[in-house]
Image (cartoon, rainbow, N blue to C red; front, side, top):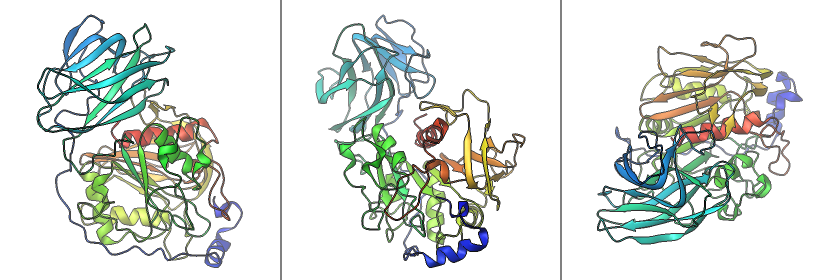
Length: 480
């Protein structure tokens, strides 16, 4: 989608000025901030099985991060055949079960559970059962079929107040095994409980800051020239075989892939308020796990910058995508490197909160200069290993560990040392939240978009591009 592929930098501004430009000025909004995260999870959850050891199927209790569980015909698996988002997950065989030996004292609204086949085993079925008296259990929701070797997410509308215990029962019997991971329990009555027909984490993709300016198309779906809140057709119709052309945006492949994993995606339309902590705003950032902004072309207002940085500080995930220098698609004097650097340098929370800045450069390069780390789940996560990153006119980043000691490069330019300069992708944490930045919009481009826009594939250019963006998305959502 890069205009600079076919135009010189001198012609870029003229070309964009002649293109149709929508009114993409950010709207004024009222922001109420808070110094504590809106945590709707029951104490100790999500249960990720990263603590505790049980190596035999024999019935026994094990202390996990959330509390004591009884594992019947089940163990804690950490082999390469175990499907898991971290280092471990539960593995259940026959008609085994996982049962809480403690109460979730704030009840349970939505409960989501990641599940997959173990290794090359066949399909199995399982169910969620709930007790409110530490004894008698009742089934909640439908019987779940596990047929994929990749983790999927099933969500149940438990909606029980008071003390709640969960039991997960494998009901298909036989020797086929299943893996269970990331058991998330939301407190009863919280406002962010997802509808029972969907599940997983909620991802908000920005469509309100010039992502459609000029020839750009950096949204999930466009309806009559607008990135509407809910992509159409409804994502409830997405199955494991749904093509990315189900939606029309140039990053629809990204959204469809998240939906296939059981997550929910929305867009922030032009004119919608970008806030954090405003309970009257249905699209307030507090209602989402991850905020994705792909190549913004309109400056964030002061209030919006505060909202974004507070969102991360209090536990949210921010996926930042930049583009190259001189990529001002709406000819307003600011391109995405300017906009990202302004967010980080001129916000009311903290200067340089994430520990990096976008360089004003422009290069095309296929780099395999990837950080070697078996424990970095952005580069070696549940969606596969990342071995390269191809830029088609992108920008690099300079890292500043003095400002943020957690910042680290993920991929660098081919001939660069793996240090603080010339990073093509990087990550950091701030407060209790997480941040990822990629310096080019091409790797997320799926090659299809709105009528009249010229787009170029990047998502399938090599396997690493989808893996990088999906692993990073799950890392930002604290699922790996």
